[in-house]
Image (cartoon, rainbow, N blue to C red; front, top):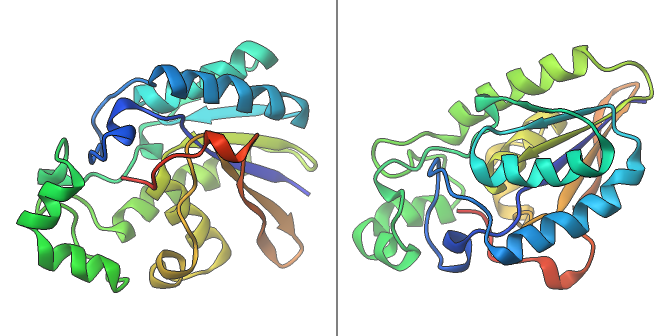
Length: 211
């Protein structure tokens, strides 16, 4: 079996403030650095042979915490970036709710609408995420484990696509990964299966859902 651990980055000031980040290049907060160090300590024993990361700073900083413990080099891939939220980027959730109520209502119903007028749909996000995943898997030997450090919505979109859930099913049934929590995909003879979801060091390291 091959295994892929999909790891969400640690907390940022924007996470804590309820701000849509999308592809803003924000670094981890002090709390986020603590989360990354604690999670890296737990993940260091998993025997990973590859460590991939979004090239956005908050994910790259998180991956570096694991790299420092394992010696694995971090491979940065822009395809692992968070969904682009267009005009919502940098806005507080309350401001988006006031200015774009119809779009948020559609998202709440599980519709894959464009984020922030000029942003992406999840279907577009899944295309680039899945391409990075398949390229990674081709390079893994039997029994290998890889860690992919990415973002909240990006992680849920990837996992849904890999295990065959529709976006609506994933959106309405899976809570977003908390900061520095992870999910685990394992290879089975019939395909990939989700073995674990929202795993973390302690419940206290979680924060707000993906933005």
